[in-house]
Image 1 (spheres, rainbow, N blue to C red):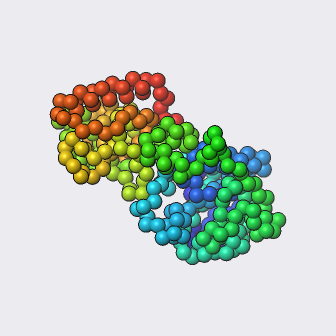
Image 2: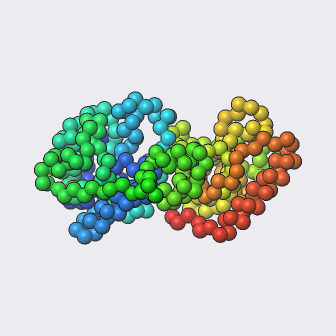
Length: 318
């Protein structure tokens, strides 16, 4: 899959263009609703024998349009994870537009002319609530006016689960409340993100449960505090494990939140390495233990439960 970064204003010779079906959206999470939009575009691309392209942004428009601090944005997918999911959904080309003041102040007509027509879109596909131009003031209802017959428009309706629309904001709330099952159902896959293994207090190895401490950017959405069954990808191999998100309350108050993972059947030193963590099951809340012995007993119970659950689960499909 080809990934092309665009910074406004762009020179035509700097950007690969050509006839294509172009799918529009920020696609945070690339959840089932987003997948429905991409699938509609893919079907049209196959029918027309054209490549399927997606246009997204390098950062949330809220950071510019609403002066949101970048660390306050909780992304379901950082850009590399988003690109991974787009590739998995059969996208041929991704345009990543730098969302800057100059870009977001484009008039709707200039956006359509420069970013849809000039790039070669023959069909433009987007969800019903897609907005564009001058801080997102134009909507899908107006797109035909700006298109002027130069490309076909396919508007994809909301995808509902029950009576509620599948939406990134709803999935964020589910993850933050510990409703991992509902979040994964809306995503259509196990929630995941990438992090770097860093040094911690190394308490786990003294307890018989060595852990990898994972650092992630502040803008990565960390699920609810508690213990999880996870699967981790390292160097293209998958390992089951149990993860603890919490504040190590047994060892004191006011500790920073950490993500620690005990990988099963794993003995490598991996400081500085990147792990991709897939969240499969929320097991329990964080507990404050009266003794180290009580903590070790609970960890043994957690591990046995995780291993039993993992036997009946399919590994993440790369």
